[in-house]
Image (cartoon, rainbow, N blue to C red; front, top):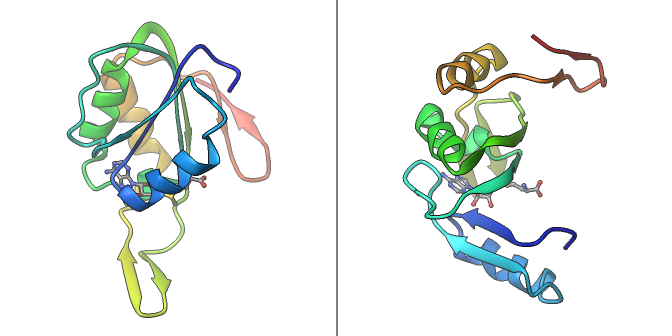
Length: 129
Ligand SMILES: C[S@@+](CC[C@H](N)C(=O)[O-])C[C@H]1O[C@@H](n2cnc3c(N)ncnc32)[C@H](O)[C@@H]1O
């Protein structure tokens, strides 16, 4: 893993177990069981990265606040979001999704003192404010 340390957080023990197997070759990886809505890291990070996870998170502002608090003052947060659908259907199991418009994320992050660098949509067009 091309960084000094890498920490992953997930609420699913099964997902972490699979990640542990996949990342076994990297001694600088630490995987933690926890809910980003509640979890407070003791250390600080240069970069936080979340891919297709915020649709599962109900209390998004609380989660963003925990992430921002875990970053160094000039740290970078990369968020990849999806706003498609009210739920995910896995046949016998249906998972409720909590979608929110990108404008809400911008407002929450601005309130939390973040500066926005770039917004990209699915077709690759970008803008910044
Ligand atoms: C769709 S998967 C993300 C997949 C992965 N990022 C990728 O791109 O392959 C969403 C993950 O978020 C985790 N998750 C959902 N709510 C969470 C929360 N509140 N705190 C931490 N992890 C959460 C789920 O357990 C699941 O592993």
